[in-house]
Length: 197
Image 1: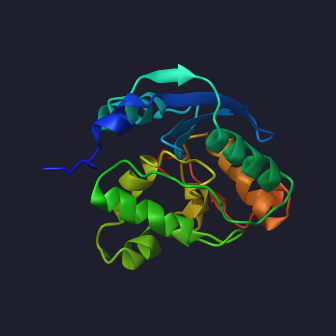
Image 2: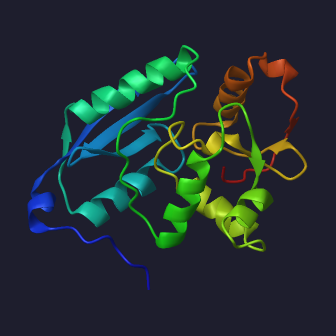
């Protein structure tokens, strides 16, 4: 049985504030904060957006209010700096709401350096579960912090570009941006299968 984080009554009263952030790579993220921590940065049109938002409300039991917050503004500023070429890691609090395994995988994603990639198998090794590359892929697909927790840096073992919640073209854009190259010059092969990433 999955364990849920313990949430006090006073925390549950606080609403989840959400705001939309348009990005130069195309599309927009829903940025959400709860109790002074970022809880979501997910693609509005992403194929798993409703699943992530439902999980967020399930864990917090909080209402959703369209508004901004200091944490949302800080995350928005960080995204602006990222697209201007900053390689700085996020300097705001993230609240991981998921299983222990998901949280471990998301934490490992934060350790992938800017401009570098890792395969699902390599990430499974780092997680201490070398035979669980598929489970790693599922946890990556459940990542509620696109770009900030850089799941776009995970590729297939054959250097193929696997799927991404923001879409295949956005993943290519982000990797080209970080590598300082054009999309046509990416050193990865296209992959037509839809794999979480």
